[in-house]
Length: 192
Ligand code: ADP
Image (tube, rainbow, N blue to C red; front, side, top):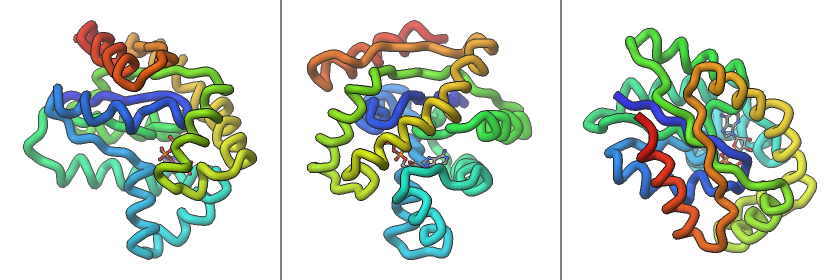
């Protein structure tokens, strides 16, 4: 099985490009953000706890997302692998992922990192807010908190995966979504 991580700051377009990648490689796309929003929509206890954290742009506890990921690996069949989007987001989550995969005799295949500068993050997220209506996209101070969290908690994963020789980065500051998508797909062709 392949285990790809789609990595990048909030608003880089992880969700936007995940469809084309998972289709091409027969992967199941797993977005922890989407799973959490589904829990909120369903009004579950987990969702209620997650909501207050997500709405201020904070991360939910590591164990929560780790449980979701392990559950997905246990239950989803009929694919050649997984495309993880928004997970791992902390060093502890990356280590937990390694442990979850090691139990199965598996390991992370590659990290596909899509990069945009902070100024562009605001522009992209504010544009998305008008389309998707996510509460955490609507407020500049919440976006700032997510960007700060990305830099302090998530960015250290770059060194973690570079050390393992699994880190691949692509610039997605192109003008159109299609152009950026082609850049991501082209990068993936170089990975094996
Ligand atoms: P974005 O990539 O724009 O930040 P996501 O849908 O990936 O959007 O995440 C939305 C929110 O869900 C995050 O700000 C965070 O509160 C929560 N979340 C998603 N994935 C994780 C994770 N791996 N660990 C902790 N919190 C997460």
